[in-house]
Amino acid sequence: MALGSINTSGITVGSDGKLSVSGFSSGIDWKSLIDAQIAAKRAPAVTLENNIKTNNTLATAYGDLKTKVQAVTTALDALRGAPGSTTNVFNAKTASGTTAALDTAPSGFVPSSVDSLVLTSISNTAQAATHTFTIEQLAQAHQIRTGSFSSTTTALSGLGATAGTFSINGQNIVVSASSTLLDLKSAINNSGAGVTATIVSADAATNYLVLTSNTTGEDNAMTLGGDGATLDSLGLTTGSGTVIANELKPAKNAIIDVDGIPGIERQTNQISDVIDGVTLSLLKGEPNTEITLKIEPDLNTIKTAVGNFVTAYNDLRTFYTDQRTASDRNGDGTVDPNEVGPLAYDSMMREVMGKLGDIMATSVDSAADGYQSLSQIGVVVQQDYSLAIDDSIIDSKLLTNVDQVKKLFTFSSSVSDSRVTVLGRTADTANGTYYLNVAGTDVDGNITDANLQTSAGAGSGGASDGSVTLAGKSLIANDTTAANGLQLFFSGGASLGSVDDIAVTVTRGVADQFYDYFNSVTTATTGRIDTLVTNLQSQNTDYQNRVDTIDARLETTRSTLEAKFTAMETALAKLQSVQSTVQGFIDAGNKSSN
Image (cartoon, rainbow, N blue to C red; front, side, top):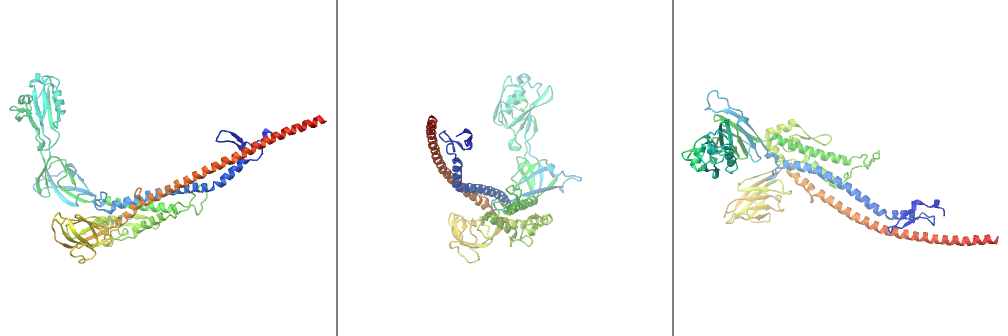
């Protein structure tokens, strides 16, 4: 066979490193035949690989969906006002202040601005209220000085000071025969006495060491002790260390009058324990000025939170619309009606969108007229079903009755007996008024028996009927009642008799009603979306294992077929060699006959 007739596309190198040529002897392209046979048998693996790609695409889409739903969840969480929540925007407060001259102020007195007298910091625990106060005096740090010294680098003993040891606030300071004013400054600053020493020079030959307490207030006045002769020689004291010689500023407490309560004293100008949830940073004392501080709900924060919900709602709807809309998703330049997103017909997607729509359709009947639905407070549905905020409406609602706006969104409760506290609820707790009947308490104040009813008088005496589970002073409503999951705390005290018909009213606003569902969808690992993704990943692992099994089996099949064809080629080559030899003998015989 001529070299030019070899099919070079059929050249292969086996796993053993040996070269084989498809059809070298037979002229049959058996490599192509094997490839075609393997490809046909590998069709199930291709199907599995396509399934893996589909699942990966779906998992990515679920991740995008989770991000969108998480934004809705976060927005609802800020608005739902769950018991103990730190993100409840309705607890956010803002403060404004004004100043006015007291009636006792001198004629013509002009009060300073609020910002020049005090700075305020308001936490969520502050109550909406108006307070008045006067800053009688600022807290002040104690400050004293030494006598004058002509040099900061000459030994103090050469300038009239006596070597020795004295103390500041119980910390010993050593003045040696070679100590300079600079050395004394460093010794004091490094002593841990809570005092800062600074050199103040009137001129080159007039130098003082000024000592300032690091903390304000009368309790933090400096105390000097030790060698009185040394203290006197430094000019810090007189009378052998008994009397401070040069006091520049006495230690003072801050003094404020709040809401008619005079003479409230604190060691510092940062006062956070007088008005609950309010920190006052006093800047200047001005006894003739009354400051009025008005603490109100932060309406801008509430409106922003509503806006965040609207944005999250619209983003999720846009995502859903995109999934349902045909577009050129495969990049071939055409749009097929079936070229929709992977979640276009997904049941999880449809369920989420159904719940999203329910938010706008839900009303809170216990709220006041005009505050019972989102549309009534200015969150309106547009023609394309997206949401928008009507600023004029929502601003008016917030300014007129922010408490009713709060009721529309949040979880709220009220009780007819102050000994009962609502601790929380579950997703199953329904709106309504429930009546708690307590049989009594033991010597430790723990509830001995109780029941929870939907009508007054139904459970008088507090006998157990399975409606609640007791845990000391706490109880949780069971699923035999619509209050299922409602958590209550009863602080009736020890050895109490029966108490009947304590009314507990629960109102679950829109945000509170829907938060649990959306949170269950997006919870990490155990949430419904993550569970779907985990299942897809498990499927892909199984699919890939099956693909690997098929490929391993087909590789064995390929090796077997290649071995058989190679054996055939070898046999043919030998036969062709014998044929050539025989033909040579024949040709030689014919020549000799001629």
